[in-house]
Picture 1 (cartoon, helix red, strand yellow):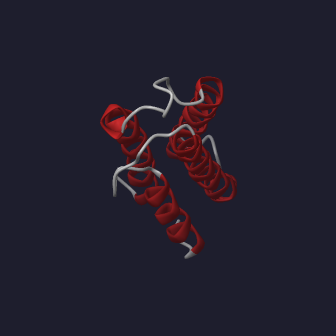
Picture 2: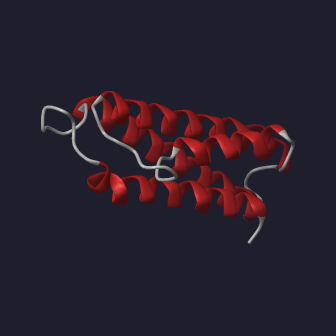
Amino acid sequence: MDLSALLIAVLAALLAAHFVTRPLRGRAADGGLPSGEESARLRADLEETLARLEEIESDREAAVLSEEEYAAERPRLLRQAAELMRQLEAVDVEAGSRPTAGSGSAGGSAEVDREDEDGVP
């Protein structure tokens, strides 16, 4: 398993952890669910971005996508996924959720950005 596949797996695990720990972090102050439509849109966009990351990884391994195309597309998709995770976390916080230390996805996605800016392929 190469580094890019590992990063995709980590992003997927962070997303899963975010959803699994949500009930433990509380509900909105009014007792309802956090900003449903916005949250659903962000989740759909994030799932689509993660699927695209997996797709370009497969395309590269199958030699359908050149290394140059992969190197250009992957960092953009990683940044997009990280930003969507930050936005999703912000929607949850605005809606009154109480994230616990280490359970939010924003910290993990910021780590991915730092790795990407350092030039990790």
